[in-house]
Image 1 (spheres, rainbow, N blue to C red):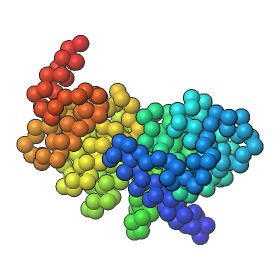
Image 2: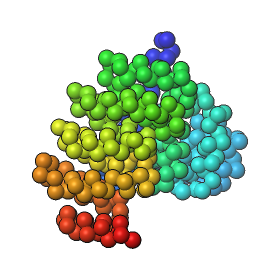
Image 3: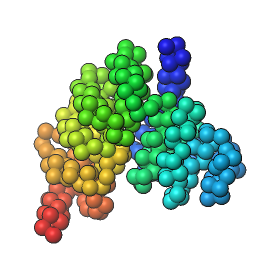
Image 4: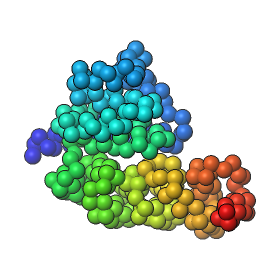
Length: 288
């Protein structure tokens, strides 16, 4: 148990680096250059040649190299990551470098790269997709230690994304959208978006509308529109409600603006913040 606790604490140190940088990246579209965070990265960029040298590398270097290649849009890297996951179990170290690389992967425009980031993050946390890891997370998410709770919420989102006990995890994350503290609701929303499941869209829309915290409303909107692991088709299902939010008199000006921003992100249409213009566009598209 002591070893398990030490492992969780070590993971927590890294995860908050990842979450902070990840939040910055999703709020501001341009990510920081990786070489600002990765020592020596400017001298040792990953390249296709590294794929030929993977067998000579240790597991940590393999994972780092493949994540760099995946983020750089190397087509072979996601499949290479998938093929190495089993042999990496218990051998990856969660540190600031790994946090930076997985965060960059989760911010990729390529859904396959985001999924690769999820897989590597789970392995680096020492979490298997099994009942033992799930039970540990379920206990941790109810812990009195707030930092451990936030880490567990995030990790549950990772596991649900990879298809393990998804329905159970979704219900747990949705329940934490009702927590009394803003931070727990914030990370419940982030984690719901991370699941990439159809059933997560409606609770996020509800949080965007009803939550008393501007931060939670904004992050729910971002999860629907851009962050997380929803497909473009899943995001499109939120359009009718987002349209309603743009002129909902019960919402403040900031939430109206986030609704317009979400519409722009999802549809890639450069329309003004005008509800009538958006409704006209949506009706024309629906009639096609």
